[in-house]
Length: 195
Image (cartoon, rainbow, N blue to C red; front, side):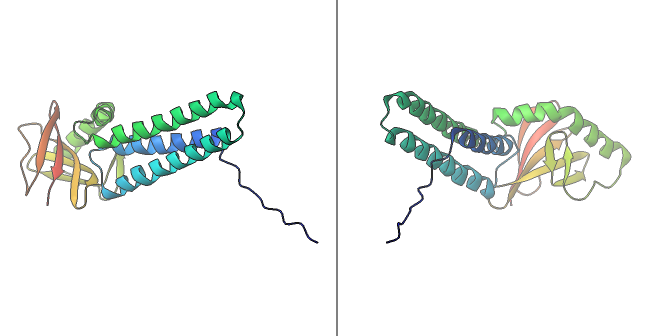
């Protein structure tokens, strides 16, 4: 007679869960601090959040299944950490730019580099670079120089709109189609290009 062995998969260990949670949180901070959020960002939030929650629940169940009273505090810590990550994710993604404080922090950290690049483009009259590039802490997808203003489009917003930053040194930016502007600082504006 042959013995059948069933391998029971262990719950994820705490270090793995913490690393997964940190990666997810960094991704959310990157998304939450950009000029807008697109539909793919929603998937990062939703599926990443569900993944973090499921892993922490598995860990909690594995620890409490042992019925050892000494594991109760560790289980409570696991539930607390997992819950905190979910709350951080929800708060981070529910506030869109330009109201998101993470966006303002990223903009302020990038303002010198953005202003230098915008002034260079306005004074030299050179064609804006094509393709994606890093300016400050923003990944600029498209750069437009029109009517004395520079637009740095950093991401798509929602399904078809685009969001970014506008440097307009002499006046309020000029509206094209369904643009929505919000003042940021000095000569800088947040723009949502609606179509």
